[in-house]
Image (cartoon, rainbow, N blue to C red):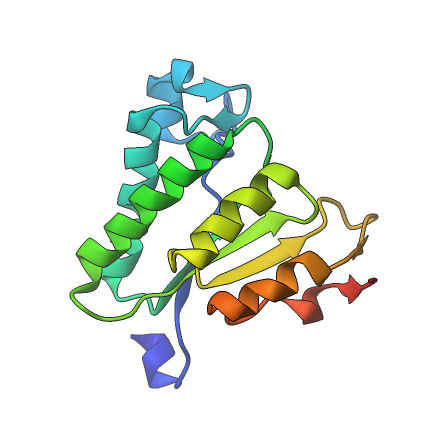
Length: 170
């Protein structure tokens, strides 16, 4: 409500994989189901973890968020193409179910140059599931990467690629 009063759009953001096991930040699902994670990572090869993530996103939309952003940069590896496609399919379905006919765009920050994420998000962009992708470096000391492979996604309606978030080196 405050965002609207200020004339701002509200995007809810989630980094859905880091469980912080053994700390005060550990999520209940991680404590109750350690078999659903690998180290610090909640694994999306299980229907239960995908449903949990989709429920979080659905709640964002039910709050009235104008858009949803998923940060895939927290421990991005250990997920297969099938895991990521299933996860984002369920997230997309949750957004549509909670949106009540309004448009709620989905944005994702992904590791630049990662072949698995590239293939998955190209499919998600082409199918209209994800409307904005922000390729990023994993560490601040690795700011150089090319956006060239991602720029063609604009042809499929991907609104922004995040040029301002890094230096483009083609």
